[in-house]
Image (cartoon, rainbow, N blue to C red; front, side, top):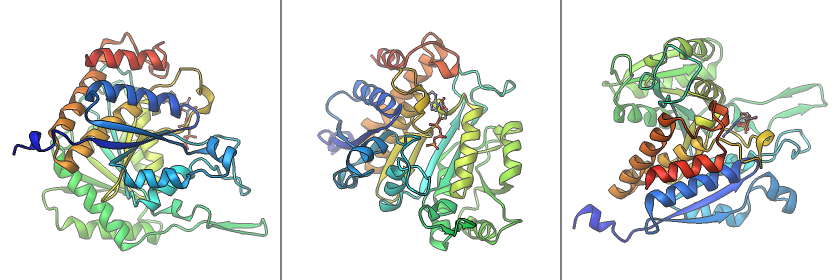
Length: 369
Ligand code: ATP
């Protein structure tokens, strides 16, 4: 039986969580685009609640039913979560717990954040054109400094600490994932070399020296991928001055969070930056941005980050299940996005246009027809 035929009847369950702020707008935009691209016979979107809004109503940021649905689904699609006023007693935001809990409970250890400049997007790096900026940041997603969330020590309001956590298992697996990802790609734009850059502060802290040492050990299994090192402060300059040098960058959780926002800035902003959070069994896909409460409910959000996260979801499902229908759908959506951006008539406000979120969605759907 051909693969196409074997998968002819297969449908995929997508646990879908709108979340807060612009979350519902960008998530529903992506559902509309994926439905247009895949027809009615491939994906089943199941809507579930979660986030800061849900917490204010029921006291649960990640309801049990939502977690169970995410566990049972083939993939998870999410808008964004978090509202500025909704905080715990220690001052930290509640909404982030939606994806932080899913990251740890579903063991989504590799947060893949492509930094790709699309045609028609006027990025701030004026000397670089589309095709020259195309690399991926892999943010370790379950350890590092953020692993201490909720567990730091506040001593009498005078001394406060959060610990940076690293394990051999955690570093090894994200390093292995990143080398393997580099192998699948076509290499750095500058020279075509498969390259993994380790981003750390190995010169300052033992934890980062460990991150570098373990990744270097793993490199022995990937002799075809060039190993490169960069300090987290210095790489912020390199990413502006030689973005074509990079292929895959792997970083500890907080550094990965920070440098991926910088990377997003180089390709048009947070509204253009997708992400896929992957483990060995589960995958969660959402834009790299937060819930942007300042523009929520105004139909003003840029949905491209979430739509491109939807493309990553289709690619991941295609690879996981060997289903070529999903590969084709992913290619069609990315090509439709590229054509809409290139044409320039329906650009969202954050990248210089005037189109509303709903108008951008309709334009992508028309390009798919
Ligand atoms: P988090 O820490 O949860 O990632 P954040 O505090 O970094 O969130 P965001 O919610 O990502 O903040 O938003 C930062 C700013 O970027 C917003 O105020 C908004 O103006 C802009 N922004 C983010 N995402 C989008 C988008 N999809 N479309 C348009 N503007 C956006």
